[in-house]
Length: 403
Image (cartoon, rainbow, N blue to C red; front, top):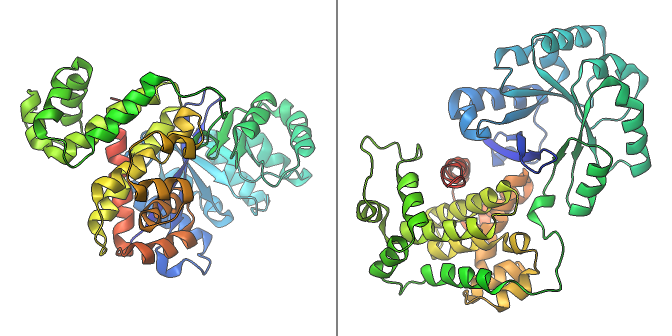
């Protein structure tokens, strides 16, 4: 059975990544019935640590993992490195003496404990004292109650994590209230819809990226773009010698790198470098998410039973967050770019055959397993391939996001 593991980013106050919450599903055939929490966490830990590798999934950051009451009592967290795991105590855990004793031992051994979906009850006091992080859901908790929690719990020296932060306005509210960590997709939306236009220099970069991905762009033209830009040449060699490729021999020349990557690979690489320049003032996770979407859309296209242009899918995924990167409305941006009509329809109207691929990727990254199940059927892909593509995309994104 394939195991579906998605991740949701958790940011620090400076909008840099602190960690990822890992989301689990045991396959799309059992999307609708509930999976036992003990089984879910056990399989998640087993597959993440022993099969996929924690470094690969969490990129070396903290992995926030839900633990049920039974798993806490059995002290399952102690099986794993304390540097890698944050122990999330679910909201339905009853603070009985055996639970408190187990959490006390876990905390004493250096593990970070977080209380998930926190709602204050006096009975939780023993667990609050052991916790380092309190997670509060901003979508369901009234603001006045959140403020009350922050004031009431400040003597415990815990840090607060805001969950379900979906807009920059909510992020700013939580920031001003003193929250240390933020979980949600606020970073993937335009921060302010500026009245001023996009800078001409950025439009030029966007147009270069579009031109690079046209079918009639010759190999020699791509080579010229690389060789006349020292920074692109340097980054290309770094990329080709990264851990993602695991080469026995170092690639030492631009020509060698170009030949090995091929025309489509070079197009994709130049697009990534340009996108990195456009997103230089944004959270790195925004660029990383764009790259993951581009790679995963491309892989889905290759595996799909439907005839589709994989280069268009790569461009679709890469441009799917361009509105957040440039803080502009997607529709206005599409008016200025010579992208194909299917790509524009998918990005602006969220319809057309290409939109199903992007919907699938979005469903996976948010752990929307029901939506994922529906998209798999529309795309015409074997469901067992989806986790494989996601992990490949994560690995690829991590190898190029830092270039």
